[in-house]
Amino acid sequence: MTPLSEIADLLRGAQRIGIAAHIRPDGDAVGSVLGLALSLRALGKTVYPLLEDGVPENLAFLPGAETVLQPSGALDLDLAVALDTATHERIGASCVEAFSRAPVLVNIDHHPTNPRYGQYNHVDGDEPATGQIVYELLTGNGLPVDDAVRQNLFAAISTDTGSFQFACTTARSHEIAGEMIRAGLDIARLSQLLYHTFPRRRLELQRAMLNEIAFRADDRIASWQLSQELQHRVEGRPGDTEGLIDTLRMIDTVVSAVVFEELPDGKVRVSARSKDARLDVSAICARFGGGGHRMAAGARLPGPLSAAAETFLTALEHEVRRLS
Image 1 (spheres, rainbow, N blue to C red):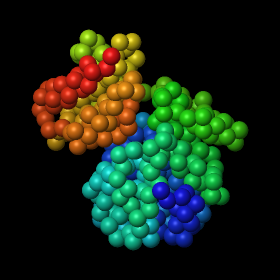
Image 2: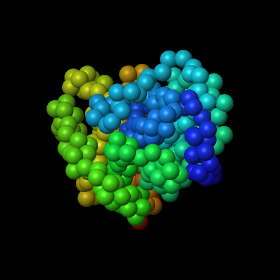
Image 3: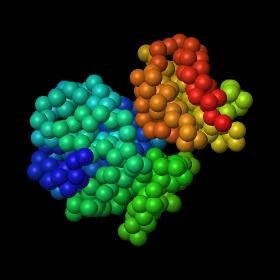
């Protein structure tokens, strides 16, 4: 694994730097990209923060969000950095093209399934968020960290740890939050924006989910199928479904929660969660070309929606019933 000090040297030695994260970006992806981009800009670098799908509306309040680019064509780069992206292709076709002329690719991630696709790779599956790795990269190597950088990296760490509640959360996660608070970060404001400020359409989706939850394996699996028809009806936007699966996880009997989202191209996006360390949902998702973490993973299956859900749930139920 490439030491963070070596990656810091690469960043200092480059002038034109592209930074990207995975498609359908979440808080860790957006916060990590923006946190690193703002730090490097403070060093006088020319930085291109790239997201194939742009910044979702629920994260548009983060400092620097308006600078994110949706690329078209190759960029003249000295260095490319992929963050929070388990495979190179997951940054999206346009970002892959944007990076195509870069002589060096740095891969920083916390997904254990990452195959180390960069020339330089810092992949640590024990870290709860890529934002936590970026924070250590910056603070451990004297790179600029101001309030705007802290806001983004707090959002990255907080969202990927479930507001510091998931099993992946480490003592260091809390220490970093403490360091940020001592530096003056207003985490109450950020938490309000991250977890308690939603458009009505998201609540409409949540209402539909509560009415349509399906149970199996003696109520140990809870799932929901989100159709394109419903998304169009509520005028849903990217990011609206973020965190909805956690409501399914709250049910006392449930050991695994799954949301199936029908995509415009007819494929089905699977988001799976486990509440039992013995149940590795990343291994199940890997059977369908996906991956992720032991307790949180995803995949994409061919449609139609109901058939994809049944295929995945059959495999999941087999594993759940093997638990004592």
